[in-house]
Image (cartoon, rainbow, N blue to C red; front, side, top):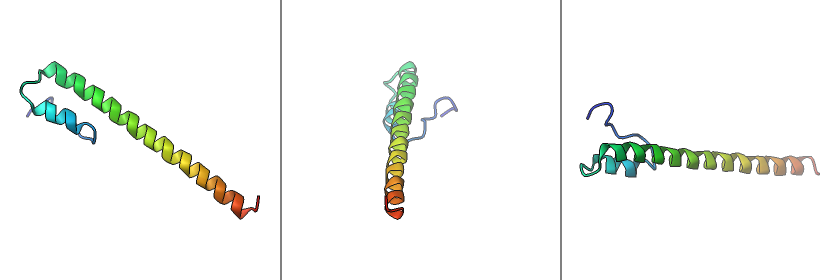
Length: 70
């Protein structure tokens, strides 16, 4: 495979990689699929990151209140 045709790395992009290797899928569709899957993957990673930060804030506040007897 050339540099342009390497399947991208990542969790949700594996499905796009499988389609990428399918000779029946045209090149244009491969590029569109890649960009969409990368966007979806970034969206989920951002959502998970924000959720973890939110939980961290809640637990930190709870610990702070119990330590200071509020």
